Length: 482
Image: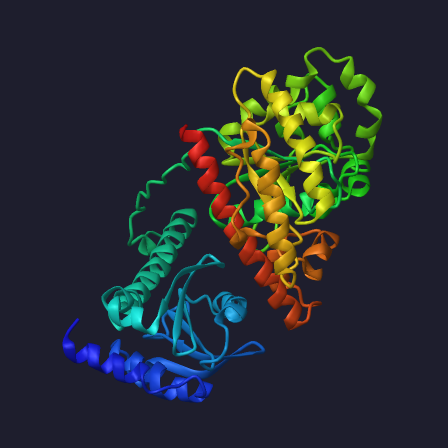
């Protein structure tokens, strides 16, 4: 980057203060920056109306067929927190079909990519970082890149129509239409996973957010590109209903099979009971549960080698997933042994309060007991905190010390980690009520029944689940390499 460009950027970013308005950010930073990136004023539309939304900027180079936009820019005042506007920009990207999104308050710049309506954040840069990394910033957002992408969309559009035209020409024997030969497009097969990691989310203490954590952790991993299977082995079927499956209407009345059949019928395969649930940005496969499982304890106890039945049933489908999460009941019954025997690792959710922490000792001892009866180790990934009261910092510190004291009392617990506080899930109404809606909390973005403040709270919570998912990825990959 030339010194002249560096000085221009520094002057732009220095022209606003924390008290500047949104319009000042637009006039002093966004529009001069667009010109610096090579755009003419005719190539962006300000206050563009799309359906009922009014977008700050839509950037494009031409109205190709079909109409495409390269960049949506949403501007906020410098004192605004951009994290609370991320889902707003995501909606704009999907409504317009734009490729990239830029969210800025003049001090911070968030860049998003829209892949087939799946919007992911690429990077967040401070104004100083934009100056330092302007080369990458410009390559992504500049007029030249925009032009190349728009031309590619135009080519694909024409290419698709030429293939349809060729088919029509052959079908109706119109040789004059057959001007373009059929191109041969190689399709790369999806690479299978080497072997899914099976994780039981385990705690015999009820009310610690176990099922809610399981659902939203799975959703966050799926948003990170992982294929996830959820297994509900709890007769209460809270996970099943938490993802929008009614055990009566969707399973029993339709003659479908559930976890009970998988555990008790020799010929029933996992693929026979899996139900796929797809939302706007998340796809999860689910083995549902049913209240009938509560009557099966005698049958399970009398089944030969029952502790390994789930492990055997899951073996054929492990290549289809990156992670398989098992949600057992809050107890130490037979299905818990079945779950733990099928698992590669255990994740223990807890609250930062005395009773749940006291229960951890029993949960860890139960895991160690199962570990001793297995041929391969059963590691504990760590302790994941849910329902964290952000206003009780002193209590949190006291409870952390209590956990560390508990872990230090037994040599077998020395490697068990309390997950970092960035992964702790806050106690919010929108988190506790999300299972009632039958969807992961990230779907709050598209829930028109929620007020904006509730959507903001849901975004806040899902950001924490995403950080939890990234930490689980790191820890589980370390265990897999060991």
